[in-house]
Image 1 (tube, rainbow over the protein chains, first blue to last red):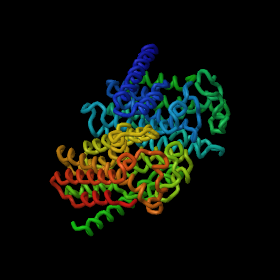
Image 2: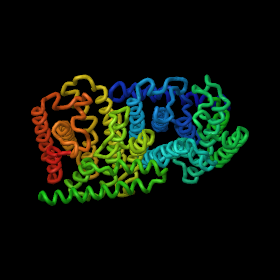
Image 3: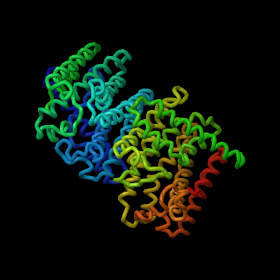
Image 4: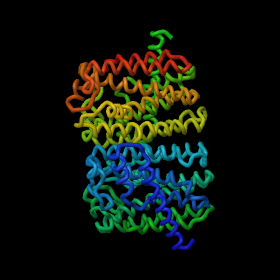
Length: 297
Length: 297
C-alpha cells in the first residue's frame, strides 16, 4: 500500500475501534454513573496506537482485521484504566488529560478508581468471550494469559511502581529502560503479540515481533519525553515541562536532548530491522514506526 | 462426614490456601514494594469463605479439591483487592481491617491502589494458567469469563458503585438486595459455580447451586449487618456501629433487628433447600451455611 492507502487503512480501523468501544459500555447492565465514567475516558480520544498495532499486525499477516477488534478494544480499556488511576491525586495528581478534565475531576475519586477497576476487569471478559467460536479456546486463553502478564505486576503495574519509586532519585539508563519497558513497552508489545497470535504466527515470528515491539515501545517513550520539552501545551493537552516540574527521570535529563534524539533514532532503526526480518507485509507497521518517531502529541 | 471431620477438612483446606497464596506472590518478578503490599493484605487473615466454598463444592461432587486451588486463590485475591480499594480515603476511609492497619495506612495510597490493580490482574493470569493441561482450555476460559462477570461492572464493582450512590438515601429492600447481590453475592456465587464447573456439573445443577449461593450471599450480608450492631470491636477488628455511623443502608435499619434476623433465617433455609435439591454430598456446604448464619466476625 502507498502512504495514502496506509493512512486510509489506519483511519478506517481507528473509526471501527472508536465505534465499538462505546458499544461495549452501553450494553453493560450496571449503574449509569460507572458506565458514564468508563465511557468518558474511553472516548477522550488519543491515538489508539495499541489497538492499531494489533489490527496492523493482523493486516501484515494478510488476515481479516475484524477478528482482532474485541482484543484491540480490551487493550484500549486497559490502557485507559491505567491513565485514570495514574491521574489520581495520590498518583500523578493531574487535572487534565488530552485537554479534558481527568476522570476524577469529573466523577470524583471513588468513581474514578472504580471505573478503572471496571475497565480492567471487563477487558478480560471481552477477550475471553470474543467472537464466540471463531477463535479457538486455546488461542483465547493464551490472549488472556499474555494480557494479564503484560498489564499486571510483572508488566505495566510493576513499571508504574518502579517509576514512582524512582521519583526523586537519579536513575541510570538501565533503570530508566526497566521502567519504560514495563510501564509502556509490555502493553505495546502485547498489542503486536496478540495480533500475531490471532494470525497463527510461528514462535520465531513471535520472538522477532516481540523485539520489534520492545524497541518501538522505548522509542515511543523517548519521543514522549522529548515532546514534553519541545511540545506546546495546546497540542499536548497537558502543561509542557510537567515531567521536569515533577522531577521525573526522563531520557533528555539523562542523555541530553541530542542524546535522547539519537536514542530515538536507534530504537526506531532496531524496530524496523526486526520488523523486516519477519516474512510478511510491512507497510502498516513501518508507517506506524515513523508515526511514533515523529508524532507531535 | 461428622462435624469434627468437616471442621478438620475446612481447616486443612484453609491451610492449603494460606500456604499457596504467598507462594503466588513470592514467585513474581516485580518491585518488592508491590509484592509486599499484595502479600500484606492477602495474609491479613479472614475467614477464606470464598475459596472454601469452591473447594467445598468440589468435595460435594467427590472431586479432588486440589484442582480448585489456583482458582480458589484467584478469588481470594479479587476479594482482597476489593477490600484494599474499598478502604481507601476516597472510598470508605477505613484505618483498620481485621484489626490491622489498612493497606494504604502502611504503604500509602498510591501503592495501595496499585496493589489492588496487581491482585486483580494477576488473578486472571492464575486462572488462565492454572494446572497446565489438567484442566481443558474450554473450562479455564469459562472460569475466566465468569470471574470477570462476577467481579466487574455487572458484578462486584457495580454493587460497590450502587452502594456508594445509595449512601445518604433511604433504600427499599429491593434496592438493598441489588447492592448486596452484586457487591457480595456475585463473587460468593462464583466461588460455588467455579467449583461446579471444575466438577463437570450439569447446567441444571449449576442453576440450583447459583440459587443456593445467591441466598447464602444475602444471608452473609445480613449477618454482617447484624454483627455490626451486636458484635464487639475486639472480635470484629473494626469499630462496632461503623456502618450506622456512616449512615449506611443496612438490613436492621430497614427491617429492625428482629426482622433482619428473620430474613437471615429465611435465606439460610432457602440456601439449604437449593443445596439439598442437588444430588451430591451436602456435609461441607451445609456446615458452611450454619457457619455463615452464626459467625461472630
